[in-house]
Length: 131
Image (cartoon, rainbow, N blue to C red):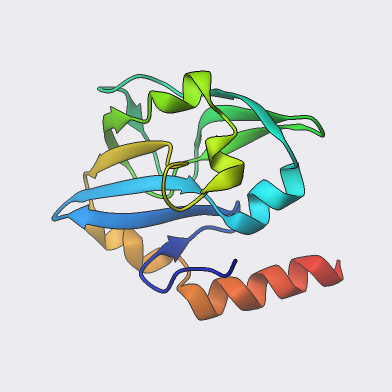
């Protein structure tokens, strides 16, 4: 699986999809889920919680590691993917669809300009793979 063109990406391997106006949906990339392996638990805050660009908003646990999740934008969580509580493997099976984690109402949509587009993220992942 590649990296969808309509998304923006962080160096921490989160993606952001603009849903409508000021709301973005957030998840982790296909590359990240493959590196983590089988995901067994996800801890994300509830709707209404404020998140800040570049700061950790939750934790993802796999059979290999426990990693922080970082917000690509600043704003208030408007919804959370409740399905992940019972089925965290959705992130492995469909990282850009059913495996989304949360939606955030951005307080400053210009922050999207600081994120990578598909070409930049693809090049970044190639650099990461080289070590």
